[in-house]
Amino acid sequence: MSWVFKTLNSTLGKKLLMALTGLFLILFLVVHLAGNLQLLIPDGGKSFNIYAETMASNPLIRIVGIVNFGFIALHAIYSAILTRYNKKSRPVGYAVTKSSANSTWSSRNMGILGSLILIFILIHLRGFWYEFKFGEMPYVTYDGVTYKDGFAIVSAAFGNIIYVIFYVFSMAVLAFHLSHGFSSAFQTLGVNHKKYTPFIQKLGIGFAIIVPALFALIPIVMFLQSN
Amino acid sequence: MNLTLKVWRQRNPSEKGGFKTYKISGISADMSFLEMLDVLNEDLSDKGEDPVHFDHDCREGICGMCSLYINGQPHGPHQTTTCQLHMRSFKDGDTITIEPWRANAFPIVKDLVVDRSSFDRIIQSGGYVSVNTGGVPDANEIPIPKVIADESFDAATCIGCGACVAACKNASAMLFVSAKISQLALLPQGKVEKRERAEKMVAQMDKEGFGACTNTGACSAECPKEIKLSNIARMNREYFSASLSTENV
Ligand code: HEM
Ligand code: SF4
Ligand code: FES
Image 1: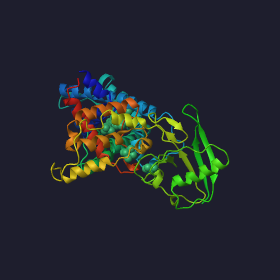
Image 2 (image 1 turned 90 degrees about the horizontal axis):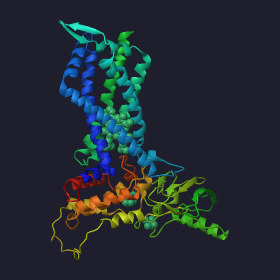
Image 3 (image 1 turned 120 degrees about the vertical axis):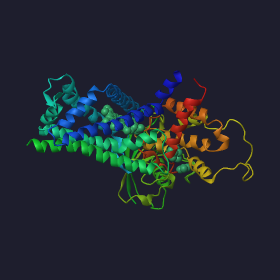
């Protein structure tokens, strides 16, 4: 098995782990967004609460949830390892650099962007995930069945302008992270082809704009509704 | 043209080094950047000072010896070698900052001269065909599709200058190594050993202390030979498939 570790420990292998965990997180974002958008259905939170309960009680979804936590951790840990390693590869820097001439800002600042996303994820987990699971939750009853009223928690949080601004800012950070990360992951996996790469790059930019924008739309709409 | 030069001066590998400012006048716009430095060095020699050491050899853009990080870009503002950069790319009165390539794996020898033998050791680790494959075969004796031949030839134009490493925020050598891996992996003579070659060259690259790849694309944008990023993707494919299929446990 030592060859597995040798490969994953090489500079290429570490990036392979970044790319695979990153792509998984991208898939997760889509599923998460589909759930969140139900917050906007004008039924007082019924669809959202039923959806949340269904997800939380499905064993398969719970396993995927645990894998997801593991992958966020792995992505963040390898991001730290790589960023440090890359810094060490140039111990003395240049006095003058004109990197804007050869690369995008996002691609050069993935570590900073990622760290901001990590802070967002931690606050987000404390505010929602932890509350839903372990907090004192209000309950609602639909058609004789009792559900946790997650919708109430979310609308309370999104009534706070500071939280809304923080959320929208974090989605902008995610957009920049993805504007490089999406297509970069394919390059890392060795997918670079005249036919597909231009498409992947366009898809990546589209994804980086649309998905964070829809995520950010939810707190904005809910804030406006709450006032 | 009159110019102000801020040049990195460092007497030996262990000395700390620092910038020195020189005023230089009477520079023609038709001079190459290296000829401008020759003028500076004649001035310095006349004054009994140590001339600025910098690498160069062919002065026609084919050997890869000339280096220099000029005003924040390897080989200066154009995608060419420093010997092919001309003073018409600068304006009278400009200040030009000249630094050596900065990378852990390219230690400074003196002033602007760096030791790029880490590239040689990567080639020595597997960047060759082990057996003598004979002379040039007759045309069409070994059929190779034109696109493949072109792809290999494009990769083979890499002159090993190290601008990719100098440009990369991680001082990564991926573009160089991937060009060398690609050039051989695409043709029948090199294909036979491509898996072992990818494993060995990547291992040596890591051992030399070059950084990992963030896919910023700075390397390819600054490469005087326009080596493409698709070579890096090919190297990743070759390396991962080699890792899964060779018998090196
Ligand atoms: C939903 C959250 C996230 C998604 C969807 C995501 C996605 C991605 C993707 C697809 C890549 C490209 C991988 C490659 O170049 O092969 C990437 C790179 C990166 N990510 Fe994330 N990421 C997320 C969160 C984070 C977090 C929390 C951190 C750090 C704490 C982080 C740090 C990085 C860094 C530093 C890179 C660049 C690594 C390199 O190439 O050197 N990301 N991310
Ligand atoms: S890939 Fe380009 S920049 Fe890098 S060594 Fe080869 S010719 Fe120079
Ligand atoms: S001196 Fe040979 S390429 Fe510039």
